Image (cartoon, rainbow, N blue to C red; front, side, top):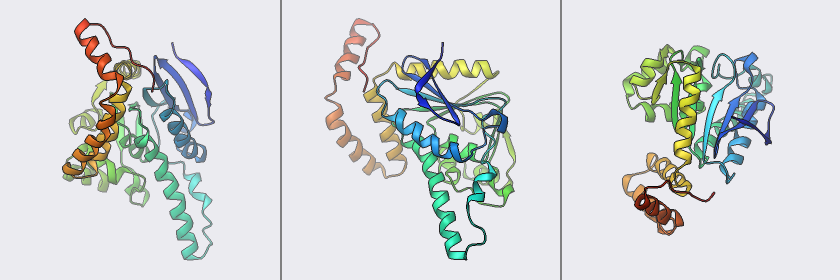
Length: 277
C-alpha cells in the first residue's frame, strides 16, 4: 500500500512510499501529458537531492501520472528569454536557462540512490534525456520513444546526446534515431538495450518496478551506493582511473558493518538486515 509522503510536497511531483525503503517520484501533470514546465524543472532536483540524503530511502522509482510518461519540454518555459535583447545578452540568458535544465537531469544521475524509470505510453524529447539519467529503465508494451529535438529545430542539449549513446552502444543506430526523430517502440527499446524489460501493461510495469526496487532496497545500502558512484565514475574515466577511485572508496567502505552482516546472513541462510545510511 503506497503512502503519500508529507515531507515531500511539490506542485508538479507526487512522492509516495511504495514499500520498505522504496519511494516513487511521479511526474504529476497528467492533463499536460507531464510536459516539463518551470515548476518541474525546479522541483526534480530539489526532490532527488532530498531523497539522496534521506536515510530511509534506498531505491527510487520515477514514473508519470496519466496516459503517458512524459511529452517533453513545455514550450512555455522558453518564453522566459527576452527575444528582443541584444544578441550577446540573449545568448547568455539562453545559456543560463539551459544549464539549469541540464542540472535538473544530472541531479537524477548524481543521486546516490538507484533510480528506476518506469515508462508507459509516450517518452518524448526531454523524456529521453530524463530517463537516460536513470540507472535502470523498464517499460510497458505500449511505450513509444522519440528523440524529438531535431524535429523541433534544435540539437538535444539536456543529456540525450551525452548519455543515450553510452547506454545503447550502437553509434549508427543512435545517430539514425537522433537525426530522423523517428519513433521506436518497446520491442526496439529492449532490443537496443535502452530498457531492461518490457511488461504487458501499466499494472504489470508498476508491480515489476516495485519488485525490482524492493530487491535493490534489501541489499546493503553502502554497497549499492558505492556501486552506483563507481559505475558513474568509471563510465567517464579510464579503467586505470576507475580502479584507483574504487580502491580509494573501498579503503573505508570495506570496514563497514555491512560486510559482516552479509557474511552472517550467508552462513545462517537468513536475510541480512542493514542499518539506514
